[in-house]
Each structure stands twice: as structure tokens, then as C-alpha cells.
Length: 223
Image (cartoon, rainbow, N blue to C red; front, side, top):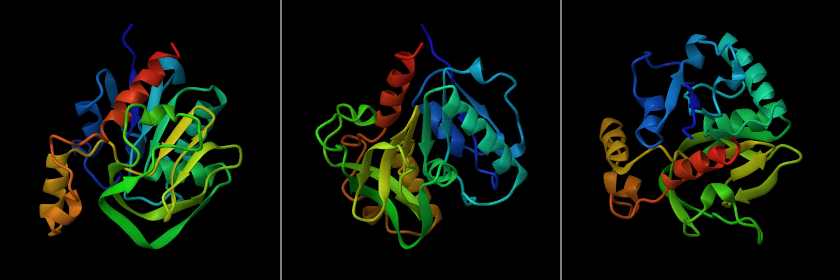
């Protein structure tokens, strides 16, 4: 049975046709982009089997009207136990919203970096069939230092919280939607050293996209 995943686009500084939220659709089938940042609404939360909260160049604590509306929608996702993948901004947003600690990090992380994929002795569903550690694409300065109370399987990489599960929300700091060609394009656009950004990752050994495949499988198990 096919699933339907709604991608909540939070890239408010891009035109509606910009590609950032669309990177997810290149990896996961049956997705629809909802331009949350342009106040596009979803009439019935159960129109989708799962949701992805995209990254953003906005801050988790901004007071834009769409961010206020997003809070209400995410609360409903949590209350109704709908699978949700929170990515980067989404990761910080959910932590801040539910009582975690999110701050500005003067160091930040950029490019493909090693992140652990295990939390204690219990397998982490989102990282199924991935090595420990795995290189994932990072691009952030805001960070989660403490996951929301009640979170499970919290993973910390020595700089910040990289992953936690809070109810039905699977929250990840990195960008599993960023492929090698996209990373190279971004590095060129921002005049950054490509080798440093890739950090040994190439189109043959990249594995971080499997996070999205794993999330899709998590959603399938709930319907």
C-alpha cells in the first residue's frame, strides 16, 4: 500500500519554486511539498501518513506567523502520534518547543561529518543498516544541547545532540537529503573547499540518504 508523506517546507527565504525542500522528493516517493513558510495549510492532518519538517535559514525562536502556526501543527502531530522526521531547523524547533535546550553554537558544523548511529544497546530505527559512525551532511550554527524531557535514544557527537526520538517524532540535526552533487554545488556557490566539505564521501560510498528510506519504512509500518 503506497504511503503519502507531507514535506513541511520551512525555507521562507526561497521562492516557492526553489529546490531545497524538493531534495527530499528525489529520494522518497509519494511526497507532497506543503509550503508552510508561505502559510499554506493542510485541512486534515490525516491526509498524510507521515511528515517531514525541512531545514530552514530561519531561527527556531522567530515569531513569524508561519512559525506560530507550525507549532500548533507539530503539537497535533505529536498528540495524534503521526510519524514525523524533523531535520536541522525542525530538530531545533521541536526541541525548543517541547522543553529541550537549543542555543547558538559559535563553532557550528559544515560538510559531511561523522555521527554515531547507536544509542546504548537498543537499535535506532532511523539508522537501520547504517555503519557506526556514518558521515552525514551538516550545515548549522543553532544546536540542540538537551533533548526534550521524555526523549529516548538521544545521540550526542561531542558538539551537540544529533538525534533523539520524542514520541512519534524522529529528530535529526543533519541533512540526509543532501547528495554529493548537491553538496558540491553548494560548496561552489559559497566558495568553500569541496574536498573539505565532502570529507571522503563520494557518490559510491554515500549512505546518509538511507535515513530517508528508513523513515519511509517507519511510516509504512504505521498504516
